Structure formats: structure tokens, C-alpha cells
Length: 216
Image (cartoon, rainbow, N blue to C red; front, side, top):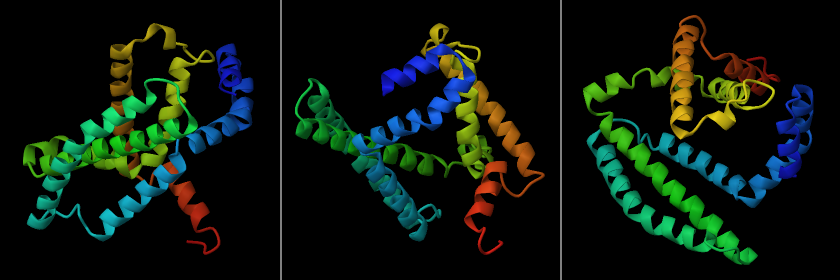
């Protein structure tokens, strides 16, 4: 299926690309999510976010700061061995059991690294200069759904054959700079939009669909 998806993507026909993505592309993506364990991973991350919210672990107080220091230390220590175990299982093609174990260790090492990033950010945010420097991120977060979708659309136009087709010409450095520019433009748009509206455009639509029965 991935070969077929790559074929119609490289063809450069926008209509064929859209049709393929809402048919074969959805099936390929769904089966990949099953095989890569993303269903359980996504559910787990939602539950983790719910737990953090209910425990109010982002509230700045001495108890929570001690928690995030511990989280940083433990996750940083666990990351290296979890990553190495993942590499060992994926070094050579093996049995289904070996691949499954590799996927499990891959998800855990990514969770450990995610906790390193989160705890580091929370601790750095206690510094006034740092919190001021990243204050604009709150606008981006309030429109995360809109940004997620528009980022995909912009990226497809920049890199795919039906658009500018810059993929063969952009290495890591150039792609990173493009990402910084797109992100900066999105932040500016979010700040402009939220001064005039309560929610992002797609967040508003999602809210209406969520509460369509109750007319909220």
C-alpha cells in the first residue's frame, strides 16, 4: 500500500492525491497505526494528560517542582537503556515477537524523552526571562488543532510534486529553516486571530460538532 501511495503522490496530480488519501491512504495509515502500537500510545498519552491536569502538576509550587525534578532525573536515566534495547531489537529483521518487543521499547524510550522535554520546560519556565521568551507559545497552543492541520497543508504544498516540490532540493538544515519560518508565521497568525476570536477556526468547528446535540 505504501508503494501505491508513493506512486500517486509522485505523479503530481492534486485530484488523484486527494482521492488516494481519503481511500487507500486512510487504510494504509490505519494499519500502520495498528502495527506501530499508536492506538495504545495515543490513548495512554491522553490519560497521562488527564492525570497531570487533575493532579494540577503544572501549578507552580514547591511540591510540584520537586515532582518535575524527580521526573527529569528518572526519565533521563531510563532513556539511554530503553533506546539501546529498541535499537537491539530493530538492528536485524526478526520474528513478529522481536518486532513487537522493539515497538514496545520504542514507545517507552519516546515517552522517557518526552518527559525529559516536559520536565525541563516546566523547570525552565520558573525563570522569568525564559517564561517571557516563550510566552507567545500560549497562542499557538490554544489553536493547536488549526496549526496541526494547516502545517500539514503548507508542508504538502512546499514539498510535494503538485506544489513547489522542494523535497529533492531541501536537506535537514534548509528544512529546519523552513519549519522555523512556517512556525513563526503561524504564531503571528494565532496572536492576530485570538485578539478577534475566542477560538481558532477549526477549534470552533470541532466545538460545534462536539456539542451539536445540546446546542452549546
